[in-house]
Amino acid sequence: MQVDIVITLRESILDPKGKASHHALENLGFNEISAVRIGKFIQLEVDTDDPAKAREMAAAACEKLLANTVMENYEIRIPDSTTT
Image 1 (cartoon, one colour):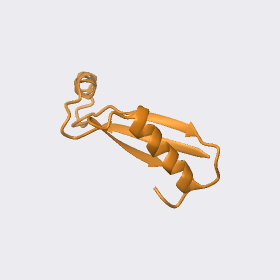
Image 2: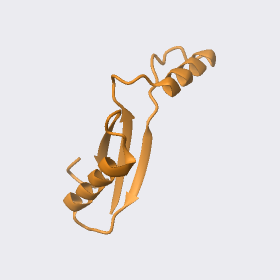
Image 3: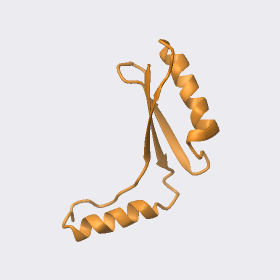
């Protein structure tokens, strides 16, 4: 089962990569873009057919390794699943 994880900096954390990207976009003429925040996208293949089990495993992976939960939030998405 595929599990998608989106990791973003918490709103209270400054995002220097996002700020630099925003400045570069402005220099390229993208003046309608008012802010940029950079995050990570991680895709896992989990050997289970149970969405709850896959979500539980992904959350444990995020808590233990994939996300710095002091500075980052994570969202687990399971494509073709009714729960998020």
